[in-house]
Amino acid sequence: MSITYDEFKKIEIKAGKICMFVTNLEPRNIKGLESNGMLFAVSTPGGAFSLLEPNETIPPGTVAA
Image 1 (spheres, rainbow, N blue to C red):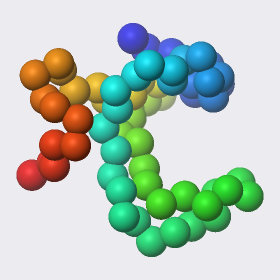
Image 2 (cartoon, rainbow, N blue to C red):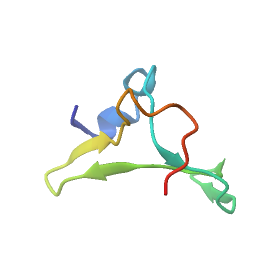
Image 3 (spheres, helix red, strand yellow):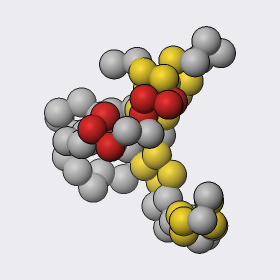
Image 4 (tube, rainbow, N blue to C red):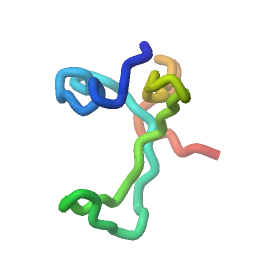
């Protein structure tokens, strides 16, 4: 599903999603909040935005190689 970044900021868009992310990054303050990780996402010059989601055969907690 492709959405805009503004739509992505709504919590309903993220509820129930299984997402890929990087953890254990050095903490950084982003817009006043501490961040220790990063979601994998892609966007287009036209503003479409999408989280990268694993297929159902990849179990939660799988480490990327």
